[in-house]
Length: 290
Image (cartoon, rainbow, N blue to C red):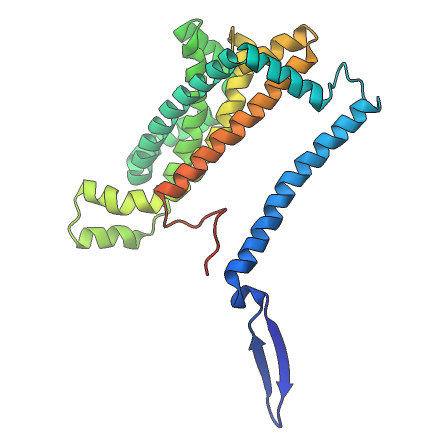
């Protein structure tokens, strides 16, 4: 806390005089300066790295056939987007992520809520789910291929399975950590099962659940790209793998940049949705309080 503390000594006692600092005197101004500094750093660090990359390619410090300059990647990406060659792969990846994320989030939240509320259900299912959780999800792809065949099914199922475990764990932990006093208060007021869920379990657990959902959003993009490199005829993962095999490294980096942008945007949308759904929860980023 930015405060000035001065020690004054009287005849027999020492008195600490606390004076308010800039944060207390001008909270809004201090918060704006802090946010400006944070945003400047967030923009400056990637920009400096890109400029260093461009300089290294221009000065032949790196082989631009293997690591194309950022301007080359940007020009190639612009040309592919203008010609309409890029969007089918972006859309293929995006729809797989959205479908798998929706299925995994819904099933993970439902089961996590059930297991967090009922100890017998938790005792019956938790050992099995813990064992499945540590299995690398890409190892399940052959099973999904046998179940659903070639097409969209295995990709969506793999994303759903990945997201399910993140949401399930965060939901179950959030429900179990709800103070017993909250439940007792609901029972004292005669709340029904639905009222207990609506007014106690949901608002108390939702902030932690949305943290897990936000982590799952980023992991879902990682998994679908890896899956598309193995068993897909389109998508950003297929674009990256196929262009690398053809030594089209500029196209490969275009795909990588698209994946990074997709992951950041998707994760940020989940975060914004979480802030809208839980205005009572502490914010990881946002306005300070005056």
